[in-house]
Length: 114
Length: 114
Image (cartoon, rainbow over all chains, first blue to last red; front, side):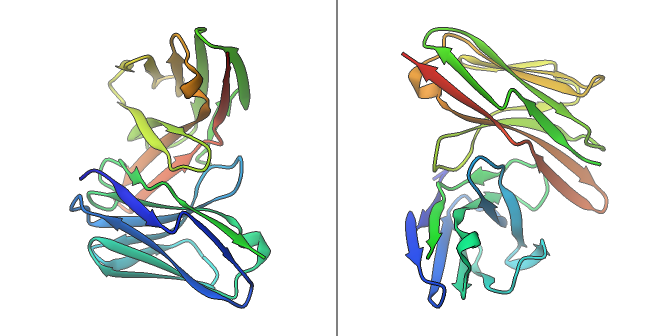
């Protein structure tokens, strides 16, 4: 299985809602990433997990809360988001953090905050 | 400053024609360079990876070149197809003893018309 899956594909939420994005991979990768991508812009790194531990947090607001329950799963908990948080959220994985830099991306979750 | 610049921003070509996308980088140290294809609303998919010693690498109708001296790369698409319409992102990976950086270019949006 060489796929990174993300659910849901689309999510619409109000500013007072709490929701979660999910990401899963079964390639045995030990590093997982969350990116945020606005339209016509490159992905921006948010978080990196290495061996289920948070290793990089790119100064992301606390309304985004990552969680790595095990080596195959990565969640992003959302609470009290703002309309400007609307974007495509991409999950990626790699064999190890850093390594050769090869990351496998999921299809993304299109998030709209009303 | 570590930067990856791509040109053109967007490109329209007729089906069956060839095109070349450019990537200039000022990343140091350089570890490798990847070209990704990203369909609208989807995650990026790796096309090629180039290391310092490689000049040319092909993947079907995609051929990437790298000139490490001038810090330039190009992606040539031969006999374009409608399905080639996508964003093409140049990504430079930099690995140091202190960590790593993955620097994304802003992408070139390619439109292939019938």
